[in-house]
Amino acid sequence: MNTPLPALNGLRAFEATARYLSMTEAAKELHVTPGALSHQIRALEDFLGVKLFERGVRSLTLTREGEYLFPGLQSGFGQIREAVGGLRSLSADNVLVISSTHGFTARWLASRLYDFASSHPELDARVSSSFHLANFVSDGVDVAIRILPRDYVADDALQVHKLIEFAYIPVCSPTLLERHGAVENAADLIGLPIIHDEAHTNEIKIPFWAQWYREQGVDTPNLESGIRFNSADPAINAAVQGAGLLLASNILAYDDLSNGRLVAPIPHAVASNSAFYLVYTRTSADHKPVCAFRDWIIAKFEGLDREKLVLS
Image: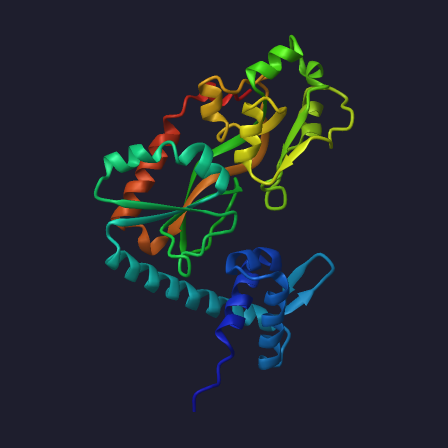
């Protein structure tokens, strides 16, 4: 007799949560709220008659039953992803769906895609910008570009390439710097209006102004005031227009630094502990559009002028 199975949504919710040991991250991947995810897991626990997680104040661990269930589900969903990914590669040989963060799309990728398109006129590239992790099955994504910890370890079903580790540097418009006057050290920047980019503050460890000034040996006043943006693109645009001093990713500000729309008054970069990664499923590793984009973007990052990254 066949064993009755629980709802698929509950199994997906458990597998993702067990993989991250974080309901917040699992909810992002599945595009549901943490509350909805918790409800699905509790419904699964009720169906099975066991607890799958030990829930602490700030921690989540698997119970013995959860540890037993997780490997089988992880393997099963991995096979589903592989099957769907393989089917997609058979039916979409000339289409490449790229998922990228809003900031990376606007400040780096968009201006370079013409080069990829001219090199591969047989391919139809489609870009989808999102802060969320890409779901290669439900979202129809072929490749994703994401900011992840520099020691990121991917799921077994995924292939990842670290494109470049990056840092944050203070940037502003040349006109703002000219109005402010000569800058010889970090202390001379105090008094300039501040711009804050809060795009990823809840996802990765991002340095803030206090850390940058501390590394320069400068005691700082209150740096919490200023304009705040939840995306790098408008934050950098505001800096270009002279609205203030921005602690910007040296990758996202690369083009504006190269053409002089932005300057780095003190060329000291503070590490972010993060990197840009290219991610795709292992089953699509030999898919021609994926291979073409992988080779192209890796070459683009290898060709960046390291001096213009203002690393110190």
